[in-house]
Amino acid sequence: MNHVHSSISSVSTDTKGLKKIQRPLVILPTFNEADNIIQILEAIEELPIRISALVVDDSSPDGTAEMVTNHPSFDKNIFLLK
Image 1 (cartoon, rainbow, N blue to C red):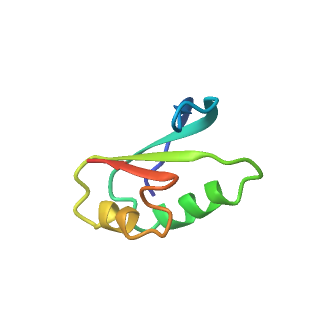
Image 2 (image 1 turned 90 degrees about the horizontal axis):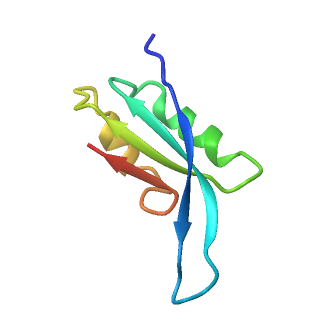
Image 3 (image 1 turned 120 degrees about the horizontal axis):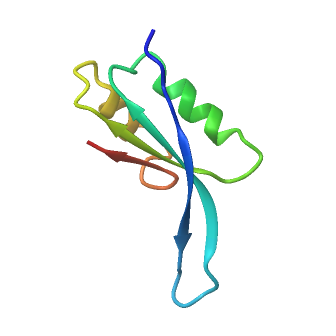
């Protein structure tokens, strides 16, 4: 089983001059995590606060990146760096 490590930063969003809102960003480095990534993303979405997730995929041949881009929250709270 591969281990997924995360770290927390904050993301600032600015919508047309409105007050900036900061929220946590979880960075998920992945390689061959297709069996786990959906469960991990769903667990993040179930947290009581709004959190963004940046999945950093290291060219996984198992379809990890595709699973992330097909997730309903992709490009809203879930992002991908390949």
